[in-house]
Amino acid sequence: SGWTAVTNSSSSTPALNFSGIMQRAQNNQKMYFVDGVHYRVYKPTTNTIEDWTATAGTLPTDSAGNNPRLICTWRGRTCVSGLPLDPQNWFLSKVSDPHDFEYGAVPSTATDAVAGNNASLGLIGDVVTALIPYSDDVLVFGGDHTIYMMRGDPLNGGQIDLVSDAIGMAWATAWCKDPYGNLYFFSNKCGIYRFIPGQSAPIRISQAIESLVQEVNTGTHIISMIWNDRFQGVELFITKSSTTAATTHYFWEARTNAWWPGAFAN
Image (spheres, rainbow, N blue to C red):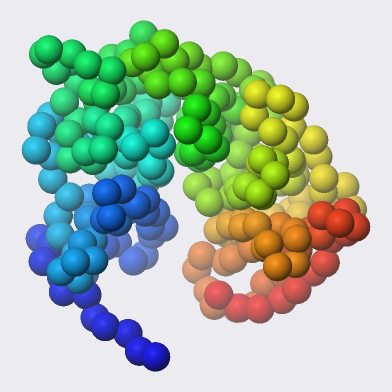
């Protein structure tokens, strides 16, 4: 029935970069935010947003001091990526501790923090554009023009496999998952695909609206997708990032394989 303002106990006002795209991931009943500029954590028990700091190691940054822009929770680890000057790297916190980014801790355990540049698995062979925690065993890396997947924990026999070297993913939120294990995403070439990681190759499902989505500028629009369980389909939102003018969005109905347009503003 109403909103309760959050107390800003961080080191800046506002606490987050509202002119950019923010992403967040829950871990240990707290919400962790990245926006390329700040590290922040929201604590619901106190209704405060605070600086997200490291208690061990150092939170990832690139050589120019940029912070990550991508985040997810996978296997109890907080995973970040999307550093502008280190775009192929990935970073995983210690299991159940988003404040521990100490790599090579002594003595070492399989739950320690790990990163692509100091793990045997290595970097992703592409600019990382999306982090998708598909299951407890699979983390999907969307790339500028490729797709990779990590199977198993990187410190416990995990490996990185190539899913596709011909298709990439649009930035950040351009994916969703249905209850049946299908993963949907908006590609780097403005097509919509469906696949089950580890079981099937990506299949294009957007042929009916190709002429409508081929001209989408993913640099000036935010692509977001979510599974609508009530209507059994995928909501595809194509939102202008610089204006509140109405834009056309789409809904794919799984039962009929049909696309439906709709228009509303940001």
